[in-house]
Length: 385
Picture (tube, helix red, strand yellow):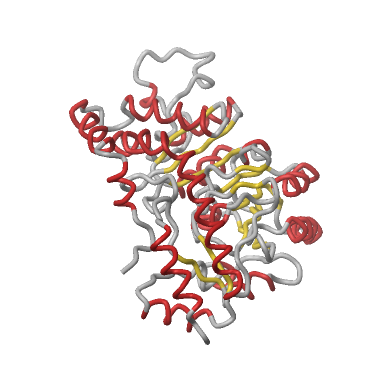
């Protein structure tokens, strides 16, 4: 059977470098916040063109850190797309705030800036919630329309998070989403384009004070430089707790893995784009739509997702041909039992509710060879349903 994501191929290609890095971390013995974490944070900041990068336990905590630092809470509205994984919205009720669900663009599957603007205006008019934050998602690896989303945020004084759990490494005219966002968050879950060998995440920002606050929060609210300006504390700052925090640290061993993977990540994005282009050329005649990336944008192709009117039958056919598929997302968040009580933007989310019936993702990873890709294309082309 063809693998949906072949992580072992990448490990073998790296020729034992990851195993050696892990062994070095194990022998070094600094298994929590060791030197590899600091090195990786520096490397990640350089790659993402950010002043600060902070590792944390997972991509969900990465979203929670800035919300906590900004004091988001009861009575606040956080605007999120519904066509995304639960983590994007999940963090909002943690702090007694409410997610407001926004529809997506029919071609990029990312947050629709027009619907966002209407939802913010409607929330203000209703008066029940105070708009505070927008979380835009770089779905399937493609950057959201940050210029337009940022304009809405600036108009209403909202903070902007780029949820780049799937899209880290994507760019718009060479710029990372952080050019527009206050914070970029990402996940190092193993299936991500830049994934570790367990859970992990990070936040990136150019805001010096925000970086300090998030550093404090990820380690139980420890004292940081901004806290110690007018006080003396001669002990480990983690024993002076200035705010309520979390235990959300990136493991040293995972940082060691990520250091090696980040070295080849830029080249792997290029490979993924070559693979996606070849998919588009081979599949366009056989499906309703292949992915479109706006001119000037670069996707990291976390997923390769097509549209087909008979999606479920196609999935069954491909399974018979030994081709795995995945459906992201069969139930959008605003229709999930845990989230159906939260507000939605004006006129609902018709694009999201159409996409849930027709999208299907095919095997995609940086080591997908042409022979295997040809088998996938042929299997799709052979479907007559």
